[in-house]
Length: 111
Image (cartoon, rainbow, N blue to C red; front, top):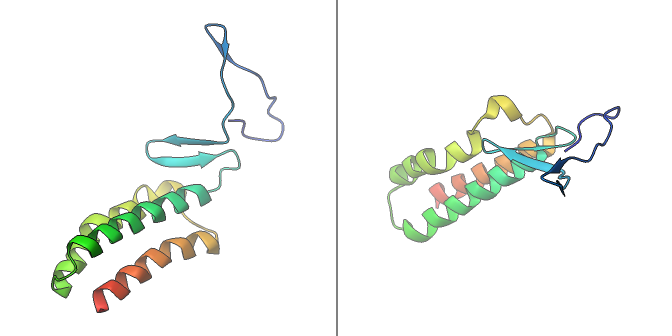
């Protein structure tokens, strides 16, 4: 991954094999792309959150409202808030992606 416009694009070799260039890198659970934007990480966090919400809906559909709230707080919110200090979503589209998951959970609780 090459970051910056003045950074020369060197090719790196390991034991004579050229290492492939990537545009997105995942390190410690945070996705970082060459433009240093958090959009990819927001999409992945929302995908994981939606997956867990679907699991809750399938397996715990007849539970009381307070138990569903507790499941949301314990199982979904950690995916949405993991390392938020590092990738703070400052674009409106990134915030909207994360808020969709929260709205889906709210609809699930109220129904």
